[in-house]
Length: 386
Image (tube, rainbow, N blue to C red; front, side, top):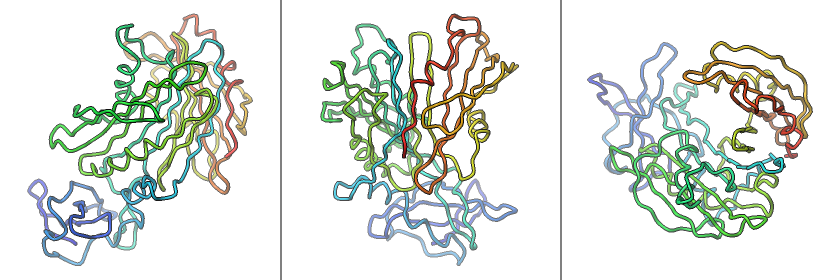
């Protein structure tokens, strides 16, 4: 339905849109079409308090014609429902860490932007808060040092601050749960203003790891306050991570993935003074190695006073073509940094676009690690066939 609303004292036409089949108690988003030269720009401004029965009368014929056939909640519900056949996502990065190195694997799921159809045209829903689901499998050597008085589980419960792109909110309740068949702590977070659920962290320091090492895992999720209902199913999705019978970095796990969610995977290989991050992410049809590099640079901080050291072709298992580039730059408040980066393309799923492959390592310029070449990492990395 379309109603008249006042936003900052300005009268606007707003659409009330249900992203699930209508019924008593169905939550409804309030979507406002802000005037724009190329047509209205649709923005979510909140969730309607009440139920479908409380909707005000229609205020006019204009408004979004329809929502996507599969809404965010519906795709998550179908993937997370215990009675539905799961859509498994199998990550493809396999790394064999050099002796003495630590390893951590990150799996990240983010939904595509929601869209609205208006006047025969589809538009992205702007200012729509992002839902995110992240898994981290890590060995003890890769955990941030916190002293011997802090056991691994306590340190794992703080990792969500680094894993999630958005602040999950203020701490709420903590409960015992299970993950990968082991006891785990479930930390719940709430929105500071409304108290609505806004995130969770599920941490496990089990005893079933490989080579006698404990199994360490963290699964964290977050959603904006007006999409809090999706967190119920995100928790179910998170718990369906399947740990492989092998080392963390070498054997990829499998995970349930909702329709329309983008998957990004990382493997971090590290020593006490050196960190190399290997990443595989979805690209578009016709993408090139130059596009992979451009996307990587767009996500990087401002590279002030960049000095290029050159580039060369390198070989990486499962990657069609790869380029290695070295440069140094001046970060704010720190010594000059030497960055070594590798960019490449690998085959995507059958009939799908390619995936981008990147490896990035940063060390202080002039340090002992600056002499280290990335080749010793690249020769231990392989992109598995889809």
